Image (cartoon, rainbow, N blue to C red):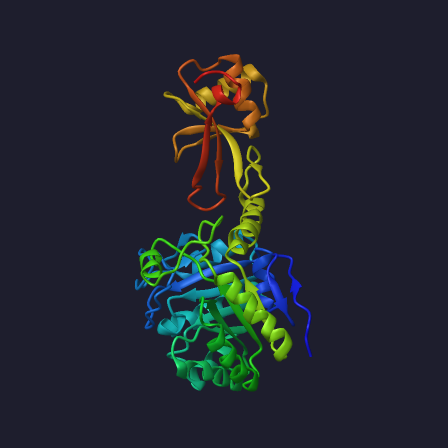
Length: 366
């Protein structure tokens, strides 16, 4: 009964059907709602940053959120078609989680697809029914104890589309295959297997257990992908399960890039150019004096459209297109100004990625 392993649009691999939540994530269409860092599990491979781990904080994508209005605002900024709720364990703050699901559904409509990750330690039939009633579309269980694997049955009884999501830990294939037999009997809807990754917070823990960085990768664990492929090939031959392998490269090269593109298309100003990676490129002029007067002088002398050069009061600088910034430098209009070509994320904090002095861009010494 061997089935075909297929490549997805995100270059991941799947046998059977791909979960809807994964389809939307690959398109960059899902808001990532980190609803709490609180968690009862103690996974040695936990990737959470210390600023979030075991802290009751909330983030919408990269933006710290103090309430659900902040979450809605960030979702709107990227035209989110759905939301992935994660943590920590969202069930620890069940009231907040239910409120988020209801609010997102009410604001964006029932078509707004919501999936949620939990270790299922706190999952009961009553809570599963509450999640279903609130509007949850998909529950993803990351079992950390042997008794939590069977909690798929609880979620299924509540009428939830239910999957299991686990990391591919080298040396654990035999154990996973045994669990997959149980999951098939429980009629699990899908299984996601993620490539194990090094992060700043779990690096020491992984190294102490003998794990190494995969050659040519910045984060993937050596042997994790091979373990996942072994499991995937076995599942294709021996089960009817829907199994998806998600490599670490998919998050940055596909999911994040597409999400940034969506947000950039919403927030880019007229003088900002969107790159293939979803970043924003523009010219930046840093100069002392009355910025509005300087801007008006530039407009008058170079006869440029006023909407292509603006004053950024928050950062005390003038911004324009990269081409106009080069023209300003070439015309030597501002003798004491520092002029740069800047590349930044389209996120709320506009994190700067690169800054090139225009002198260098023109092929001149700085």
